[in-house]
Length: 101
Ligand SMILES: [Zn+2]
Image (tube, rainbow, N blue to C red; front, side):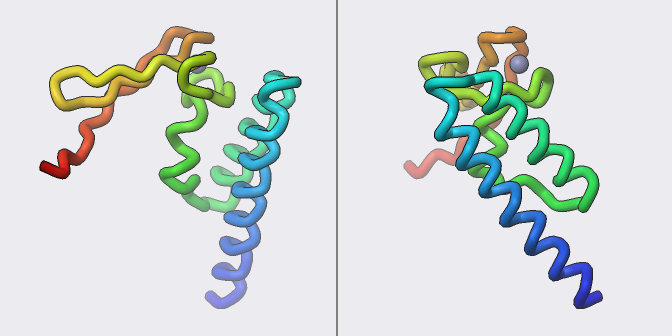
């Protein structure tokens, strides 16, 4: 079991690193960012490691493109839900958000 934890830790680090790279290259090379996202997702499925929530909102589940709000992602709130639309494939995701008040 210890070995599995180690593997998961490495996978998580690699996923983080890939998303950092995707972010870094997005401005100059969005297709490269897409490749990094694809790779991160592959690692995630192969190793059964979850992609952290903070990264989950940064890519499109349908086309794997790295998403940046205002550039290729539209973020709207509607009836207490956050609607994120990928402007590349036009798929949208709804998520209820926690209201602090
Ligand atoms: Zn998409």
